[in-house]
Length: 222
Ligand code: DC
Image 1 (spheres, rainbow, N blue to C red):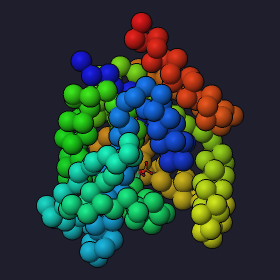
Image 2: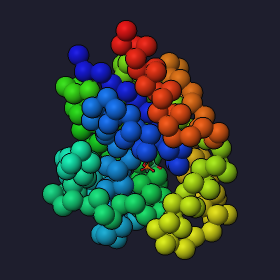
Image 3: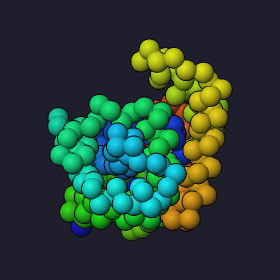
Image 4: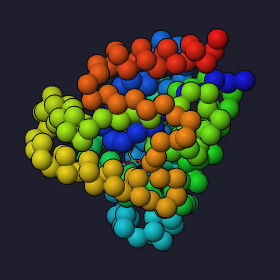
């Protein structure tokens, strides 16, 4: 049976950085589900679909095919066959993804793809509802979080490094909005699964978090 690791948590907690490292250590496949929601958001932005209107977004779902492939071990997201990895890492796409991910049609569209990927191969999958909804039988579940201030500062430094102008205050406000939306939606809201282990990375280095997760995996596999 495939071994599944689920990592959920709010925006900016470091899920993808950590999941990628764990995947490399274990030679597992890393599945970034946020990127799939981002691809759908990109479609809406490009095609003038109003993200606030569920009906419009649901209709657009019928025109969208999301799939993934791997290049040198890196996940690539394909939107109707086009590799959109280079377009989905902006604040606008992230916020739109958060807005449209509350709609049932958007979630069901991606659920099957996510479950299929984990069925036959060892994966570490990150998102908001992996431990609670997508992979309820995952052998290891982590809820990774950090304070809003820590997450905001990390994001701020990341954007500065990329040469994108930004304000720390705005980023923290965005993070709070996104947390609220992701945690309070009706379908599959972000919350810690009952059997998930809470890891607060506010005062931990990336390597410390990775080591903690590897330890939990080893314990389960013994
Ligand atoms: O992890 P991320 O920032 O790339 O995710 C973008 C948005 O997509 C997030 O704010 C909410 C949504 N999302 C979701 O609803 N369920 C997931 N499993 C992953 C992401």
